[in-house]
Length: 363
Image 1 (cartoon, rainbow, N blue to C red):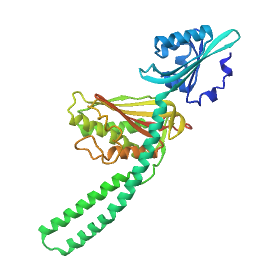
Image 2 (cartoon, rainbow, N blue to C red; image 1 turned 135 degrees about the vertical axis):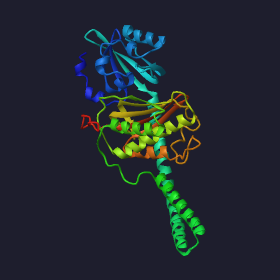
Image 3 (spheres, rainbow, N blue to C red; image 1 turned 180 degrees about the horizontal axis):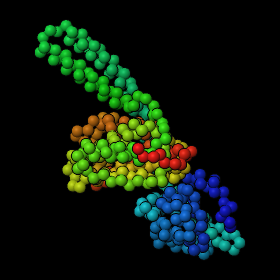
Image 4 (cartoon, helix red, strand yellow; image 1 turned 120 degrees about the vertical axis):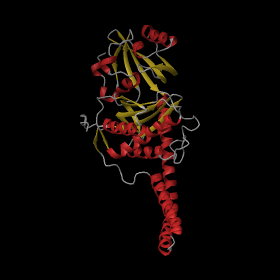
């Protein structure tokens, strides 16, 4: 079989990972989904034995050998695989022997179960976000109308009062109504749509790093782990800075409040291939991780932290993460969180601008 005759352009659009192996288990061809799953590019994978790329248990290794020697297909459900990045994945996979010109090849199809769970979770999150947004809009309307009346009445009353000690009370009323009005505006998120322009996401991260350094007095170690090959995105610089800053600031405050020894925040960028966002599969997606070594988020709260006014910190307002989520959604992306003691990671996924591959020069 001539691998060059494979419809590569079609196979590269599949969400299923496809690998073609020879009888000895060496990789002859992979699609883009397989690159993402094993954590290696095609040049890195070609010629390597499958067992050098994916860790399999003894039973699966024996089944692969039988498939090659006896032309015996097989299927595994919910099998654990560990890729080159050290990540353990739950997958369904099947092996089909192919014979042509006296040569036996193995067609390996792998479907990541975690991916399907993530897509389902994303759909649920989007529905919840839309419902929450509608609720906040209605609540904001009901709150801001009487607030306007209270503020107007306080201003009229202040104009009629000639005693300074009483004027202080009307000043308090006006200040508190203004504070509540600003709180409602924050609940609604950014008022204007993103002004998208070609943007290097590392410019956003560097601005956030400088701000966090200044706010923490350089008491938190900031680590950069950037992929320099990351293409540009189409995004709103100021809004994305606000979204990432809200996440990083939460991490910094959690580290400070818990008095973690050697506190650190890691900013990491990677390319994700064949990734689904908002029910649309993208060939390439930018992944931005903000990771801290703090105490972690309670498991009971991890699914609630994106709701407005929900905070895991005593001094938190519960507005930073919902605002960040709203900004990311407006950019066609997704924000998710994973946490355990000593490692909390917020991951931002943004679609890449496929028409432009060059990187914007850092300012």
